[in-house]
Image 1 (cartoon, rainbow, N blue to C red):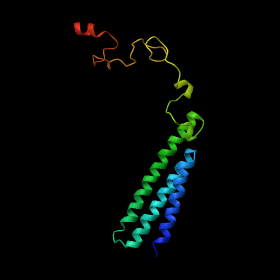
Image 2: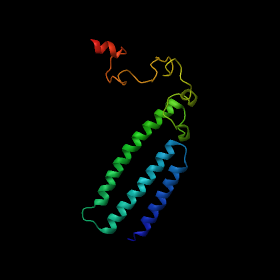
Image 3: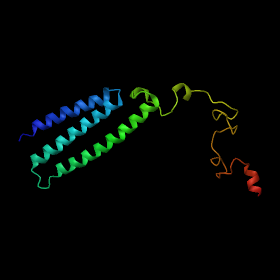
Length: 150
C-alpha cells in the first residue's frame, strides 16, 4: 500500500477541518470541524500503523483512544453549546466574547452605591468581600478593632 494516498487524504481532511474552525461562527459547526480534524489524525495513525507493519498495532490502539476522547469531547461540547443556546438564544461564537449572563450593556453599567461595589454598594470602598481585607479573617463585617479588643 502506498502511504501517499491516505496521507494526502488526511491532509485534505485536516485542512478542511482547520478552515471550518477558523471561518465558522456557529459553535456546532466548529465542533464538527474539530471532529473532522481528529478523524484526519486517526486516518494517519492507522495508515502509518499498516505501513510500518507494527506487530502490536500501536497506531490502531491509539486510534481507539482518540475516538473515545473525541466522543467525550463532543458530548461535553454539545452540552455546553446547548446550555449557551438556552441562556442566550444563539450559538454564534462572535456573540460569546464574555461570560457574563446579561447583555454587554449590563456588564458595562457604571457601579452604583457609595462604595462603588456595584448595585446596592456596601460602602466598603474597595469592593472586596469580608475577610479579604488587611485583617485576613472573616469577621462577618464587624470592625477589626472590636475583634482585637475581645
